[in-house]
Length: 250
Image 1: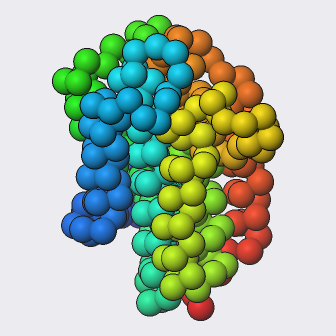
Image 2: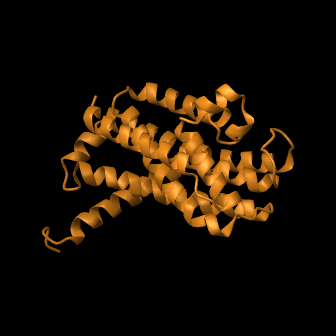
């Protein structure tokens, strides 16, 4: 096939995406964070009465929060750590000068993240259905849009962090932020159940914007404009900063 045809760049990006997906699925630590821990959280929430998740069927309130956690795991924690160590070992620098190019490398990472999230939605969604989850059918399209917006916001944040900090710092910080988002970021426990000051502060976090949007879509079948705006702002700002400050090698 001639290098000038349009299919060649697409084929290279898809090949890189397949490699990225395989790498993430073979990484036991990232598989634990991306699938195993969210599944444990979902089961634990479905069989317990704490913490309070608000008014409504508990499983219906739990699944959107766990799906938000999955997006954070795949697009922020996993991609941040993987990219940071790729940069440390000069993988990014070498791939950036291949026919794949830097743009193709980033595109491959984004597509791989969406593929991992599709697996998460199937696995965790299936588990939720088995536990009695009944999503609002009219909000599924809204939920899909929030998954894409959340992926953009968190991947750009991950690339900003991975491209500016040392790999060891990214490893520690990415896992710490994951825990903070889980505990205090409005992911599992809705912001409306937090103290007034915490509710207002948390509302500016991408984790809360994503979780609020998924809950509104899958529980009420409605679109959460404020959450979408928060994710849009985070995506734009982090993309601009990552484009400016990302370093392809240490």
